[in-house]
Image 1 (cartoon, rainbow, N blue to C red):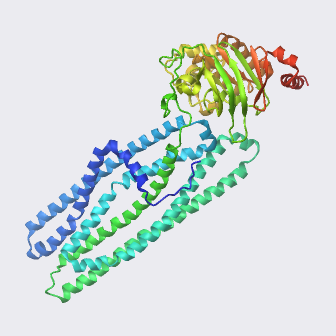
Image 2 (image 1 turned 90 degrees about the horizontal axis):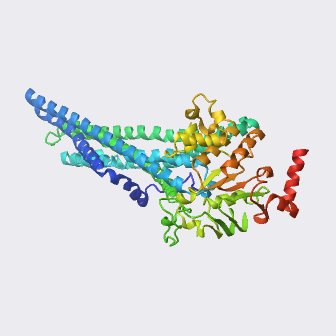
Image 3 (image 1 turned 30 degrees about the vertical axis):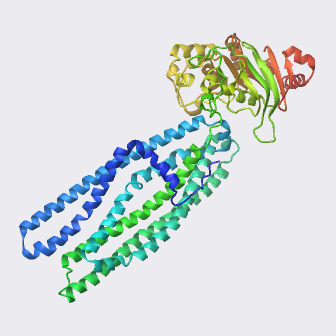
Length: 603
């Protein structure tokens, strides 16, 4: 599980080196930004020295021409400084946006490849925080920290060099407050780091809590949990607010404290420098130099406070990058054969261009599996599904029916035995090719924001509107689609909230049929459908299943009575196999299930 309260080190060289790799594609732009930053920092040293020249040379001499020249230089330095700062800011902001784009695309691509076991362990809200908030923190590092820190360092070094060159004794007076600045900065970094950690922890918990509650709002309202959930969120939100207030306190103290120390340094400069000018006529210190010292001192403490702020940006980036790289480093357990360290030498028979050319015999060979170690869900399950055969799978809740489908589609990998297609272990088949063989219809239908047509073709442009229409006709979905204002182009809201359960189920059938799968898998596909809709679907399935392998999991035995073969699961084991009549004659588990359902429907 990816923890949200990971704070990490203040600086981690390993993480920083990995972060800097994201700058490589834009190293030309980074070089431009670095040159602009250094140029801007150098130009910042010019105005105070020009002020010194004016006061010491041109004002006493009454040289208006010289004053005009210095004023022109002063203005040129300001304009050039503005242009360089604009260039640096624009360039780094663009780079930051590009890196955010690259990183988010990498994260989403990785999430697409992770197996379902990973999603069983990690809340969606927490993963959303990785892709949104944590990536935003890294954007701040790239735009305001990792490159622009050179400008602050260069400015500090430059000002210190100029002050020592102008008058080393007065420079020592100005630098005498540095221990105080160091203590204030250390206090700020330590406390701001802890408050930042708390803020990040609580914002991640807010995201996770809201995602879960908003998704389950119908349950919240049905069981009248609004006040209880509100109180729980109030507690989380209050702690997040308090953590932010605490961090604001540290910022509110730090910046005025730096200004105060800067004022103290200016006072020392005025006191020491002024005394030397007034009482020591032989002292080389001039009034212009004293004024320049004051201006340099103001510029000196600004990058110090900026560096402290950048330390917090760096601290946040280390924490966010640790969480992001923790996600990116999560091993993809379900991989295609070609992506394995040692790919299998087995190849599908006559498989070309992602199309399976074999007959499509599916075989489970002593398959065992458990979600939790020591608690097997399937135990040595073996059966075969021949091409064109219609297989029904029944059993009590928790008997392993859905797990069979999940293993067949490689949402999980078997832990014992193997599953083969035409004698080829499905782990030796490319994932895209394997899953293209199947059409899956689940009990809980997932629709996406878009249109009716886009939810049927799911981005596959090879499926034309005519094919979409034929799929809708086959499952009798056209009757309600034609009544919609825009037909196939009618807008579908998130999770299909404007459609009934039956309508969503019909669309999921049409989606499966539009892809023309070799094997149709139905997992409780009609359990949420009313009787009239179920009759429509059953009628459509007679046509759909013709010459197509079908594996149907069902609670309602009426939906699989005419299957070629029925598999009866019980406590993870395949206990009975046969036709409807053969299983009834056994008077075993299937017979008991049939009697229970028959009694419930006639009671």
